[in-house]
View 1 (cartoon, rainbow, N blue to C red):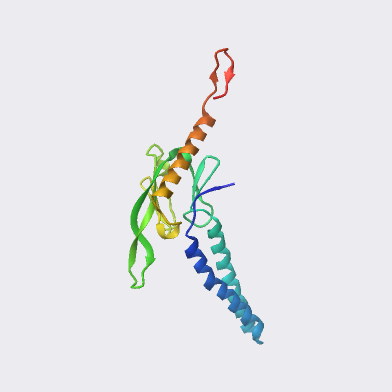
View 2: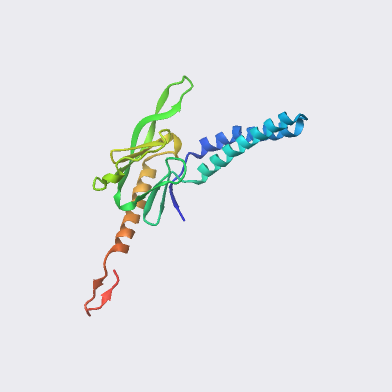
Length: 190
């Protein structure tokens, strides 16, 4: 079971469900209301396309942007499976700023507060990973999650993430620590 560390932007995803649901409704209405087979097929195709969009949006709603399971920090920044990163190489979370990748009313891209995760330089294989540019960037050992596509970011969120990261790292270290001999010479669990 994945523990949710950072939620997606539920408001944006819920707002996107409205037009997707409208496509489903319009397609079903067209398929049922019109007699010619071609119109029914077009209505069915419209409903199917809307249904695919609804399913995709709902899956994004229930998937955390950052999750944790079995010693892995999971970054969901692309379609399909998340990027499961060993907790030992995630060093810290902090706030950053960058392009929102969401056009404004004037067509310009504004700035947003972003979440940045710093990864250990001792794990160069994790320095660069391909992600969906609208959701974030993973380059040079830094994972940037665009603030427009996650829960609202503030110092409390950063403190919560860093606290959970520290707890998870300490738990993993305790699991992998060798047993220490006791005074009687028998093995004792840490």
